[in-house]
Image (cartoon, rainbow, N blue to C red; front, side, top):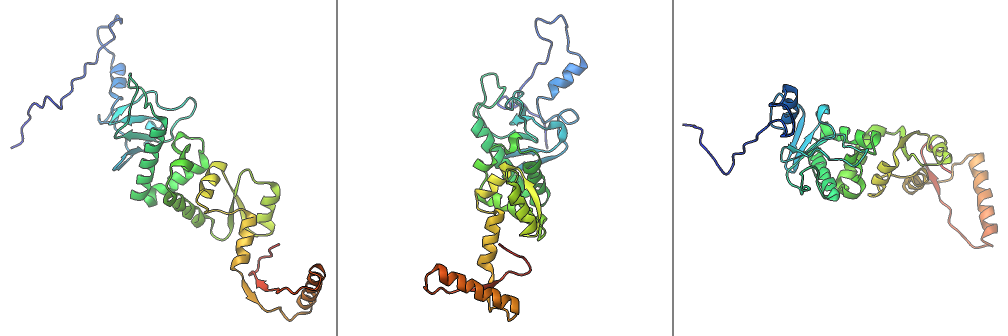
Length: 271
């Protein structure tokens, strides 16, 4: 039969009262409610409505908690770096804090733990969470959640991000770096015959780090590599163009022979 018993090694008593220098003898109800928000475990006061639990920590999607960081269920009130904040909230299972327990002392350790939680959430809830994470990378590239993504994310996760974007793009869209030149964007429209879609430079760099995304020029070269060799079409235009091309090459090479292959590139004209 279950019964309550004392466990001195596990029990903690918290005393909540007005500061000694205060003239008040007791806290107001509003002040008491604020005190209750230092932990995640009090339902009705500080328990988030949307939490993805993973083996390395909790990802909190409840918008009322965004920007908060917890360590073992207790809030670290000074997390963040100046004007930058996390878009989500996190409950870490371990970490070193400063003397006043206000913040984690190792920023790289914190960024890596965020990465571990996000990747665990993608593995465990891929269909539901991967689109949310990709949206964060695209729309809030300066958020602390993704600030170090290029450095910390595993290659397998970067490829999942690229596969998600490819599924969105289909055969009609082509992604480009927001820092690309106007000529490069024009090439997407007129040469590749696709609709250009801009990506933040941080996301572009992340995808380039695992060689998953191409520039318009690289895409043209790749199309040539995979094109099939075909005979010269027997039309007046193609036969005349072929003879003129061979004649020009012969002059440039001063009589040396060269093999010329004709490629078929579907219905796209590639320079």
